Length: 447
Image 1 (cartoon, rainbow, N blue to C red):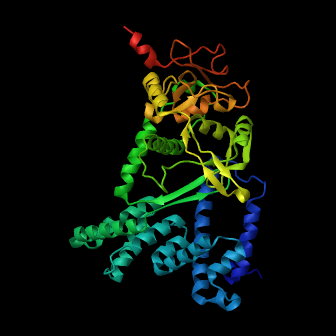
Image 2 (tube, rainbow, N blue to C red; image 1 turned 90 degrees about the vertical axis):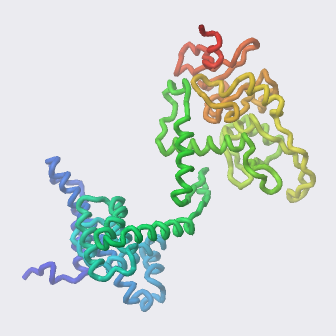
């Protein structure tokens, strides 16, 4: 006599599902028809939703029963994180999702049938949690049914926007007052939850996470958008090796450009008795040697302790402060000399008048958004003088900065004695390497 699924225990049923998944993931192709394969994917998503709902409900039941405490003397979250190598955050989220479904049986039933996806169920329960506390049980059940019905046509993001609609349907006479009160609550919560954190990932990046109230975030978003729209790449767009950037990368570049302009105009207040600056600590001899070598700086670091690449150091050296420091035993500071800017204010002013902004053809970055670039690098013996300097924006600075390999096929800049800066494309862009000049230098000659 064969047993039906209803007669099998939970553990046996899980084993059957596991065996079925193993059979599904072998190399055999069972469906040749494209329409069938598309429907199979939809069915698989729905099946995963049903399993997720069952798993969440099981996590909530384990938490409610206290079995983890009884068996292991620890919380469900701690035990689950250890038993499955989940993060505590993921384990806690699983328990919370199950508890929310327990409070809203209509949503739980739809999730168990695969009619509501996990992210939709999370959105629905969040909306229900945010409804007015004086709604009675009948109103809450009606709200559940409405939202579950909307799940057929609305994704999780759209479902979260239905709070006002629900209040208008369930209690139309008080919707205006309730909506005003909700907006005030949301504003207080947004202010309380505002944050900005920086996390070094140990691989050359810093993760930036934050949250702002909408009224504070909108000006920031518009400012970033303006820098993004203003970004110009000049004739380097012809270069097949030019990086193709995503919108997210362009916004990151815009943030960097905004910071560069802020620093160039010295808008930031002093911090610790000095203007904000990036500090690279190393001996003078190592500074010169490392600037001419390729590879990473292993013993030479930013003030934060993060190592930097030699190419980054070479770019920083174009317009930097040098602060000689005498160290004694155990690296104790014995004497600190006065910071001297490699490009003096007088030279900087002359550069801005002469070049009028970035000299890279097609770029419209203003002088105050540019770096002073040494044509012959300082580390190669180049002097800090007008005949060896041009203005370039941060983006084009990285393109024309000489590498340690003098034969590399790179963009170059030359400054004739009697004319404006010439930008020379690499051979991959122009085999003849015809010099180009910015149109701001040719415009006065046009009739």
